[in-house]
Image (cartoon, rainbow over all chains, first blue to last red; front, side):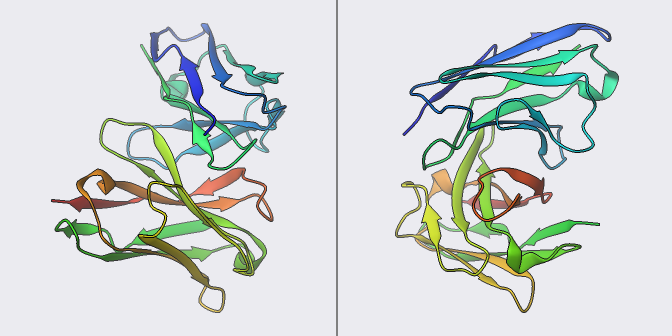
Length: 106
Length: 119
C-alpha cells in the first residue's frame, strides 16, 4: 500500500495567515493526489484534485502543487471558515490511502 | 442539488451484520462510481470500498475484503454496503462518496455519514 505522510498533524494560525501543509507519498504517484477539508459534523469537501486543480466553486486562496512523491497544499489568507482538518488522498494505486490529516486551529 | 444520505448505522455485537444504505439525488446516479470511506474515532479517513456506475466492478480495502460487499440499485439511486463478521475495529462513521466520473478516484461530493458501533 502507498503510505501518505502528512505534516504537520496540527498547527495554530490566525486569520489572514498563509498556511502550508505537505504530503509525502511512499512511492511515485505522479500527480494523482487530492486535498479535502473536513469540519466537525460536516461531510468532507473536495478542494484540489490532480495535485493542483482547484475544484469548481472553491476560493482561489486554496492552492496545491507537487508531483512524484512530494506535494504541498497552501491557504493564502486564512479565513474563519478555513479552520478545519485537511487531508490528502492518493489515487496512484489501490487501495486509495489518505494522509493522517492536519488540524488547523486558532 | 446533489444529495447523499446515509442510513443503517447503529450498535451491533462483534460477529454481527449490518447493511448501510446511501440514497442519492440531484445527479445521474448510474453514471458515477461510488465509494464508502470511514473514519474511526480519533483516526483519519480510510477508504473501504468502491463500485463502478454500472456495477460491473467492485473494489475493497484488504481490511474488509471477504466480509463487506458493496452493491448498488441504479433504479432506486441507492448504494449499499453489506457488512458481515463485524469487528470492534470496524467502529467508525461511514461516508458514501460520489466519484467525479467512472472510477476517477476523485470524490467530489460526500454524505454526512452514519455511525457504526461494534461492541
